[in-house]
Length: 320
Image 1 (cartoon, rainbow, N blue to C red):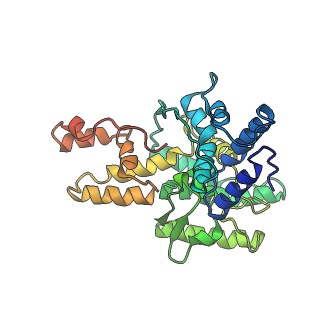
Image 2 (cartoon, rainbow, N blue to C red):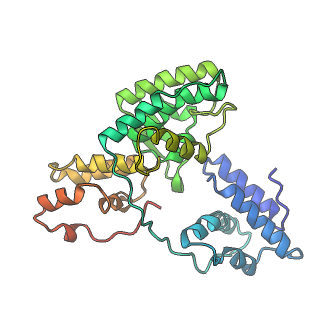
């Protein structure tokens, strides 16, 4: 039980159970549903049912919020309202959802030297004493971050991989916990498959019969802060430029796209394969990488006789 206390407590319990059982649970939902439940209980203690006023009051964009942070806060409620409508509990909807505002920060263009130094740092992590957590990190860092680099997985997809969804024998990852619930499969390079096989065997000695592929000491998925903090610490051992672990996904896309310089009509087919592998539901999501791709503009201009602008119109940020 999650301990909801508002008039819709039982409905929220059913929604959470349904999403988790369907393996379609988003990590941001837990806190935001609880905040919504507390709001309904505190501001409308005598309410007999959920009303449009209650929904609109909670979902209204606050002065201290950006459009994107508001969207993150209310996404759980939007999903719950859709679930409730399908079951005939009530028919409520948001009149206005803040428009997504594309970020202005350009993704970092990794150099070969930077990446070599980063993975050198991953491989050189030392164990402090005999702490189990340090021993686990020591064997996890080199594999986890190489998986991001070589597969284009989102950081949340990699850290929430279940062991049952990694087919090491055939080199296939079945991605269930993903953005937008677009379940998809990723094929591993042979070198990555072999590395993950060695990792799986090593971790199994430490945590037998584990459920998570990349477990913490209690066989739970790592948090996003584990990814962020450890990537930053390892990156800064040798490198000075600012970047994030998520930029490895962008690097994966751009390196693939830049390698198709002379593919001709096969370019579209390769783009489609890349789009599906990265878990995009529409091709436009992958095309978004065109605009900030390091070096691609010059390549495209060279091959299209400077008609680049006609081929690549402005695109919204479908990735978010």
